[in-house]
Amino acid sequence: MKTPDDIVIHSYSELIEELYAESWQPGIGRFRSNYAFRGLSNKDYELTTTLIRLGGNYYDLETHLLRNFAKYARIDGAGAYSFWDWLVLARHHGLPTRLLDWTLSPFVAMHFATADTARYESDGVIWCVDTVHVHRSLPVVLQAELKREGAYVFTVEMLSNVSRSLKTFDELSHEAFVLFFEPPSANERIINQFALHSVISDPRAVLLDILAKRPESYKRVIIPSSLKWEIRDKLDQANINERVVFPGLDGLCKWLARHYGPR
Image 1 (cartoon, one colour):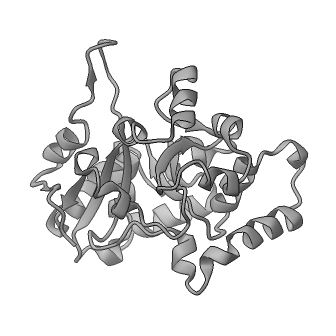
Image 2 (cartoon, one colour):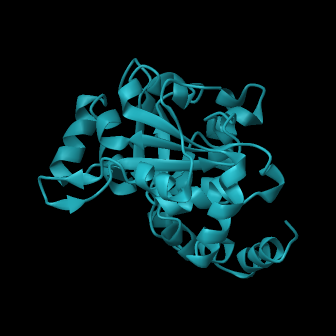
């Protein structure tokens, strides 16, 4: 799969420059990128959610999955959870949902594009989506919430102010739209990954189909397979690895197995 916005990089330094491109904000005199990043080990992987990948009549199962997750999960203080809190928690623990994982960190995206050494014969990719540009096409009520908070991405509290269920969220517009929101900083994994989620107002919609209508809102940065080892080694020296991205013993073991494994 190739889009008109594919940018093939030729060096580690070129990758850094491309991921930080357009980050200067003259209004505040600071470098603050509007991009959300998603790193994948193979450039041909599509932007499909775990819910879509479930197959079958997945769109009819979404509410049942979430209802039963909330019913059977035993979590202290869950009585104060909003619907959006439950949705994020379910995604965090592997339940198929309509959420896609993103990050605000270019380096975390680089990690996910190069972490799987079994995919080093394939070119990797980092998807970059301009969240500010995408949010200009949101329903008025959502744009008003962003303006009220002076924010460029949503929080679960902001989403709860506008919609308390997927049904009411989907009904905000007849045309499918996408927005980006930060999950609550519930644990070190979310914090260290500088996590972000995208959510579409139609469980059957594929993100690329929405982005393709606004091609200026995204780009794909292609990482040739020949550069993956160099990028991976430099990320490790910068302490961007499984031990940090997945805090705990599981992440530690993943890092050690890859770090000491043969090339």
